[in-house]
Image (cartoon, rainbow, N blue to C red; front, top):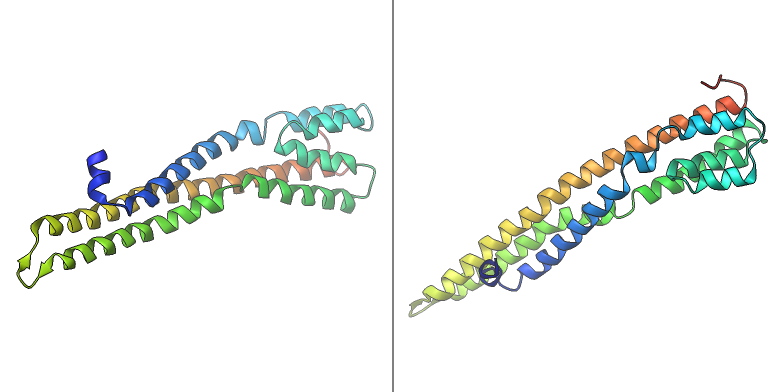
Length: 203
């Protein structure tokens, strides 16, 4: 491994840093975007069951808000349950936008790494090509410098793709996962609004 890094030259270090950041973001998002953590099952049913006993208490609303991202969205509706359907829905939508933004945290950075890594590898390739052309002199070519330039060019190209491909795959996966989670929260919030205003029976 150290021989490869040495052969790739100094342009490989930004790629190594990018790969470490990408791995950290991937593991963080895998842990944070678990469906059971974001949209825990049974939360809405528990809230609807409590609502049968009357208006929600402030302690209950605080407990729901601290439960999960879905809880934050539903708690926004519970705080405005005495208001009109439009006001309650607007409060849920505002909180939903904030929760969606929180779920998308770090995805822009991961997408940027997926886009920039091949360019960083290409930069290393250019550096290697410069070394290759520098090996050509009037007296002939310098085999050691020529081999070094080829190593820098190829290793950086390969490493750039090696960093970019997983980063892009996970970026797309996380984007789709966030969209699914937001849709699930939206559907449960709509059910809460409809039940609270007597437009739908709680099951």
